[in-house]
Structures are given as structure tokens and as C-alpha cells.
Amino acid sequence: MKILVIGSGGREHALAWRIAQSPRVSRVLVSPGNGGTAAQDGMINVPGHTVADWLRIARDENVHLTVVGPEAPLAEGVVDAFRAAGLRIFGPTRAAAQLEGSKDFAKQFMLRHGIPTARSATFDNAAAAHACIEREGAPVVIKADGLAAGKGVVVATTTAEAHQAVDDMLGGSLGGAGHRVLIEQFLSGEEASFIVMVDGQHVLALASSQDHKRLLDGDQGPNTGGMGAYSPAPVVTPAMHGRIMREIILPTVAGMAAEGVSYTGFLYAGVMIDPDGHPQTLEFNCRMGDPETQPIMMRLKSDFTVLLDHAVAGTLDQVEAEWDRRCAVGVVMAAHGYPGTPRRGDAISGLDEKAADVEVFHAGTALADGRVVTAGGRVLCVTALADNVRQARQRAYERAERIHFEGRQMRSDIGWRALAHPRG
Ligand code: AMP
Ligand code: GLY
Image (cartoon, rainbow, N blue to C red; front, side):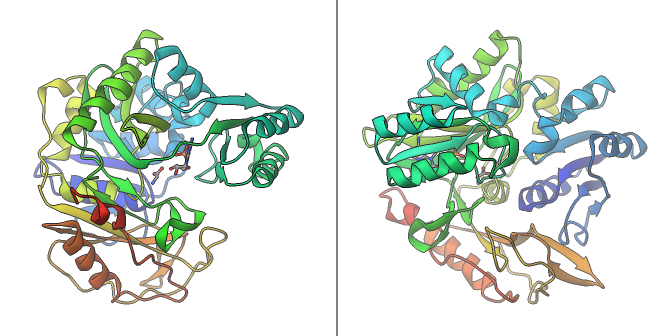
């Protein structure tokens, strides 16, 4: 059978890679895909950029099931359109995807259902927002209400920075996404990414993970989409796993169903575990994380297509996911200029080597005259499995060091929090 994966990033390469290993799958179609999904066994890229394109591909190719990687097609209603056409797809409807698409919607939803999250207020008026910052003081967090491709959050360490962020966002720096802003209480603690599959009613938790959002070593520099990730996250102990399920995930799924917007798809809760050990919800994403997906898929041992079939059929309570007990670490190699304006077209060398338990997932790459070149901000995510974080990280960096392109940016400390953790 054929599976369609919508998207073109490292997350989609990792999803397609795991799906392609299923004995049930003849071919994974990736639309539009990247330079890695174009060239790998069992996968093929199919041009496509709109819901109409993907509907046509799914019909013409007799696709068994479609998996959506990024948030934008979900917000455009790709799931609603597929369902209306009687096609099988895993993801949230446009209405359910508001949990990610509007931070104000998510905040109000969490308040209604008693889900722990930071205190915040929403403004579309600059004077009122500035007055709120004066009352709150710094540090304080400014968030654009809408989808802003990872650029919508400013953790301001001074009130001057906070005022500036409000002026920028309300002034249109993020387009419509920033026409409303949330001013949110700053939470300290340690973050984890908690990602689950939801079938409307039942929940299947995936392995825990943690990413590194800042560009530079020591978690310094500007925020990015994520410069590396690892799984599992030692901060998510079995007891913490239970609390996050009980206090955040299950009330969210039940609350959405109770409000008549039943949630299906991947649900990603960004969680801050505060110094007292209480999990707080930082955000919801209606998709898997990138780069968290890459280490998570390396560790998944079950046939992913079986899990996806159950998710679409509403029978996730009948399956369990089996995980490799080892750790996976993924190191992102980014293009010159990222996270600002990445340079495209730099030739990438060193991709052909193979190493055991290491995968080089492509993201912003393209094929040009038979050569792989950079074509986006995050270019590759080199992901390795090993018995512990230290070894997995070493294995990933050894492989990454043999891959070159002009202006390559890569952190050298992915996984440091896990190594510092007593359970790391
Ligand atoms: P978000 O897109 O909401 O996850 O925000 C991006 C990043 O900003 C998070 O991963 C956190 O590192 C940080 N962040 C968001 N909200 C808060 C908060 N209330 N307190 C401290 N840091 C935050
Ligand atoms: N790595 C964070 C995200 O995918 O949102």
C-alpha cells in the first residue's frame, strides 16, 4: 500500500523513513518532499503545495492513508477536505487545529478546563499592552496570537525588550499573526516535549523528548525552530509522565470532545516543569515537533502504519507502541544566515557514507543537477542511537563532522541538559 506524507522538512523525512520500513508499505509519497526524500529507497517526491494537489495525489495514487507533517495545511483545513472526500487522513480538523493556530484560543480553553498554564492577558491595543508590561515587570513573555513559524515568542528579560516586542508585533512585523498579543507570566524550570497520538477519544503517548530552541551553545542566541533534540527526556520520569497525562493531555482531549471539536492527530504539549515539580503547559502544537520527530522515530520499534491505522479508526486503545530502550540524539546542521534569511544553493558533501545506528535526515535540501544543495534554514538533522546520551551524541557528531557545506551552523552541546540530569 501507499502512504502520503505531506511536508518537506526533517520531521517529514523521519516519518517517511519509519513508514517505509513497514512490510505493508510499497511506497511512501512525500509531497513536496526534499533532497533526501527524493533519493531514498521506498520514497518518492510528488510536487504539491495546496489541499487540491494533495487530494488529487491521494485519489490518483490510491493512497491508503495520509499523514500531515506541518501546521499550515491543517490550519487550511486539509483534514476536513480529505474527510469530506472519504479519504483517510491523520491530523486535526481546522477547528481543532486552533489549539495551535491561536494562542488566545488555547489559553481560554485551558482556563475553561483547569489545565495548568502560565497566567496571561490578550491585547490588540498597544497602550493597554504597554501598561500591562509595566505592571508585570520583567522577565515577561510576549506571544503573537497566530501562527508565526516559530518567531512568535519573545522571552523578554527587560521591560524595554518587552515593549519593543509588543510594538513590533502589533506594528505588523509578523503580519496578521501578531495583530493580537499575549503577555504571559515568565515560568522557570525545565522544558520537555510531550507528544501523543489522539483518535478523538483515546491517547497513545509517544516517547518523551526535548529540543534545543536557541541557535548557540549553552542555549544562548536567538530562538530557532530547534537546533537539536533527544529522546527520552530524563526530566519526564514515569511519575511526571503520569501527571502530564492526567493534568494536561487527557483533560485536553476530553475538553475538546465536550466542546464538540473532537481532536484527532498528533498533539504536542510543550511543558515546563517548574522548580516545585509541577508541569505547566507552555503551548500546544497540532503536529509532531521538528526536530523531536527525528529521535522519536529512530526509537520507535512498532510498525508505525499499524498505529496510524488504529488512530484513524478510533481504536488507539487497542495498541501499544514499542520503543528502543536506547537514547537517540539529533543534531541539526543549519544554513548560513539561519534563523534570519538562510542562504540557498550551497553544495553539501559527505552525505554518502553510512554508519550503523545513524540516520542523516534531510530538511532544507534540494537536488540541483544531481547534487544535493542547501534550500532552507535547517538543512539536515544527523540522528544517532546508542546506549546512553553521551554515546548517542558522540556518534551523531562524528557523522555530522564529515558533512560539509559553506556557512554550516551546528551547536556542539546538544543533549547537555540530559547529561546534567541525574537520570541522564
Ligand atoms: P512556545 O512557542 O509557546 O513554546 O514558546 C517558545 C519558547 O519560548 C518555549 O519553548 C519556551 O522556551 C519559551 N517560553 C514560552 N512561554 C514561556 C513562559 N511563559 N515562560 C518562560 N518561557 C516561555
Ligand atoms: N521543535 C519545536 C517545534 O516543533 O515546535
